[in-house]
Image 1 (tube, rainbow, N blue to C red):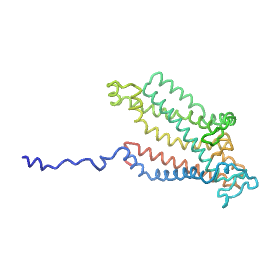
Image 2: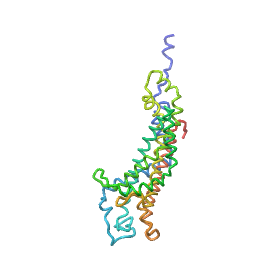
Image 3: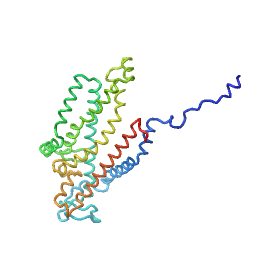
Image 4: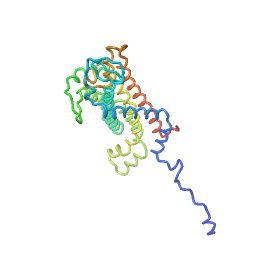
Length: 314
């Protein structure tokens, strides 16, 4: 009997295989299987390196240096992307303009993500008067045309705002105004998404158990509920960056966004309207950078949506 018991095979340990994979490993594996997301990642890394590493080879002073004797020059060995109406090198300006465009999009979406997540959590978890107040404010702000607000505020306030200096680099005051407007007027959609998820999560057993052991509401919200709502926040924020880039380019094209001498991809295209046919390089290169950046971010957002979905089989 003893020999029989000892001869029984031991149960296999979960040292490998799909059961041993962590949640993060499964997410990374699903993301890597998403071909367009990987293509978008490569493109975005290349553009990021272009605007960051490129500044090591050309200075901002050179990017803003005018040479009217060499204006509207076509692409050449000296100026690979040509020059603009003031004789400034377009390649150098796409580098520093790209930095401004990416900074605006990232910082404004950071503000949006913080506001939308916190307000959505409070609205969905506490309900009642807090929920009504937040939802009514969001409805009121959704009724205001964002593009109209951007045009008016950027035109009358951005142009009068004094330049700001960050890390030794001077930006026109319009950069800060655009970031604040985009950040504080884009949280409504995210807040509604988070609220809808929290309304479902607050009825789950783990929340009931946390209440039963005496956990405070604030602890439950930020320790138990928020981590389960972060998937939607990550995907919304990622896709929102591309929308902000397009909005910044749009108001820059209309001449009410980032003001010279600070360059952005949007206001570079605006300067190209003087000679659309003859100076094609003025709109082509910044336009292609905007297109590639937006497409790559959308591809990444789609990949993250599939990778973070626990029910996805991709």
